[in-house]
Length: 367
Image (cartoon, rainbow, N blue to C red; front, side):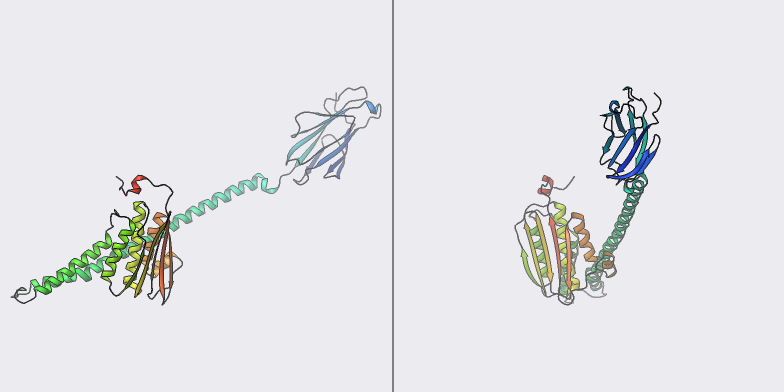
């Protein structure tokens, strides 16, 4: 029952080509992952009664039981996975008694580098590092965007404060001056009409400013409110020709969406009034199915459109920053195109969700 030292592997082949000869018990073979088609021949160096000898072999790591091959003295394995194997072979003697131990040949098939533990660990570390870097950059972008947006909002507040100071407040100061003039009675001096005109102007200016701060309730839908605002804009800016292409038909939209689309519309027209020097503005509004689109085109002086948000801040395009923020908040796409000396086009598109809650359909405010 001792190990049969006369049993040897006479040839060991890889992919049909000879690789080693005369492998004995305890020998080992190391292969690459591409060398995974193996065949081998073995023999018992005992020439007595060769017809009575029987062989069996198994590849530990691949086979679960011995393969009995009679007096056939060869075997083969194809497409072996990378790993650690032990090729065991045993035989009987001429009397038919099995050698219980046989011989053992160690076979190691190395994996490709991308399946090694160190490469997989490195890949995991790299992936975690990339994800961490992406998160840091995303947070940095969010902080930078918030800073720019805060600056834009502060600038807008300053603009409103300036309009109040230079407009209605100055008129009130003038009214106060008339009323506090010593030995003067405005009614007797014929200044009543001047006071009435000043007070009427103050009321109009205050209504205009508060109108820019307030939002409608959208009880009659977004197109109706856009039309009302456009009519007021045309009345306040008679030098600008308005081409109204607002389609009055529309489906229900979430209240927040209507509010932000209205804000974009209002801010775009404010930019036209303050900066464009336009003589004509074309307005388009359309809703086809779930797609809502608004387009404001003016024939003003135009400008070079910056490619980045920080550049918008540097050029003091705070209205554009606000419009981008309003669009981003509802998932709308805002496009700004301008040709210096010719025109500026503001386009916003919004894809409504397939299903809306009842609170959104009927514009019911959240409690």
